[in-house]
Amino acid sequence: MTPADALGARAADPFCGSGVLGAINELADFSHSKAIADLITDGNPSKDRLILTLGKIGPPRYANFIGRWRDDAEPEVRRSVADALGLVDNPTVTIPVLVQMLARGTGAEAFGVKWEAARSLLSVAKRPGGDAVRPRLVALLGEPDAMTVTLAAWDLGQLGDARGLTKLRDLTGHADRRVRQEAVLALGELRDKGSADVVRRRLKDDSLAVRATAIHALGRIAGAPAAAELRAATNEALAYEAQLEARKQRGESEESLRQRYGLMEFDLRETLQQALAP
Image (tube, rainbow, N blue to C red):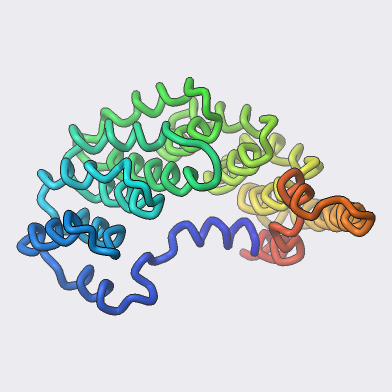
């Protein structure tokens, strides 16, 4: 696994492995909206994917129905709601619900929902009538949850708003290594050359996972001219990884090392190869 692989996994096809649901999603049209909504209401075990299909085919009025499931007990259903609302052309309804979903919750379970909400807000912002998204994202930069701020800043960066880039650069020094990691990843995906030095500082981060993400990001930003620098940073990271492994061998908890430093989260050599790829 590499930072690029982890990012790609977020866009995995939710219908993979389910031929029937995949066929329904592919073939259904607006005339099937009520039938699918009835299946969702009846508690169909595939509710999460049916919500995605309804978002794809349903008339704008179905935004209210889809939003009704934003507090579902299952995180996959909530994630589908966030994804589906980005497909429905009803910004008056979808924007406030998506902002709420992006701002709510903390931890790994909530991240998937936040991620989908941020991606959907970006989709809405790029469509006619999406002008109301940007001020809502700017307001989210003041939220207490740093991951909410990071994802809102990433959206702003993709909309060409310098406030997003400024906030992401600040967040690369955050106390939470997951936040640093996500901010560095964002700057790399935005290929912001003005952030190269900020990303370089993370090549010596005390988190191994942040170092790997910085190698990936600097490769995206600087390209081939940074090859020697990336190789040197990878060698340093491998030596650091060996030190952490030695601590594990001396009895330190593997889970503790994983949580604090991201030990074993990413393959450094493969990360380097991807960073060097054209």
